[in-house]
Image (tube, rainbow over all chains, first blue to last red; front, side):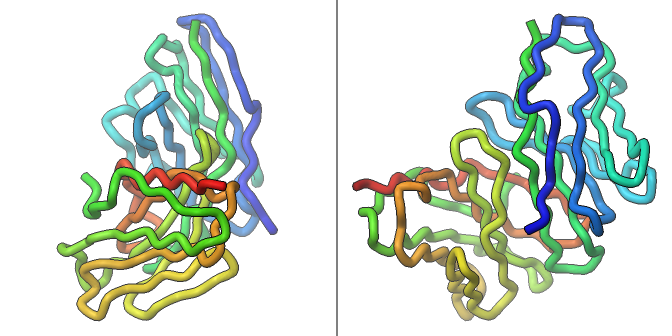
Amino acid sequence: EPEVTQTPSHQVTQMGQEVILRCVPISNHLYFYWYRQILGQKVEFLVSFYNNEISEKSEIFDDQFSVERPDGSNFTLKIRSTKLEDSAMYFCASSQLAGGGDTQYFGPGTRLTVL
Amino acid sequence: DAKTTQPTSMDCAEGRAANLPCNHSTISGNEYVYWYRQIHSQGPQYIIHGLKNNETNEMASLIITEDRKSSTLILPHATLRDTAVYYCIVRVGTSYDKVIFGPGTSLSVIP
């Protein structure tokens, strides 16, 4: 069964460093998303992406964040200068259709630890 | 904010059916009921969704009341691996429609 994959599973970085989290969405999906979950809190939407453009972003997704589809298979989330509060699980998701009843499928996540 | 109300936690004996309720009294006519679960900080896993009719797949059944104001997710024979947080989510389900997670129901399957 097709699935969303993410790398790395765990990333440790120093405050102020740049990190890139990678995702490979399901192959025939056209819509891509990033969510995050701070330990003990709810899963929160960050950004949606379609046709090489951001469709929607949340308040969390400030200028320190960017997303890119560098090729036909990868979808990345970059955090330019990490802060302690960026420590969280980051989940990538993808979906196929634009119509109602569409389903987003989530990857296993990347645990980001900022020291 | 989430448009649904779920119990905070539930227990279920292993091998028995787990019935997880969800209230969504303000659901609109074009909104679907989706269920996801999250096992201990793993990625949310899609379970099932429906609009009006009851739905069944290999994982679960979804029973939606006729007035669509509430629904029940049924795991027919719960196993220890079904211990997770279950999220009931109401959304239109277009690809532009983000998934908004509430606190969900923490289901513990007990041996």
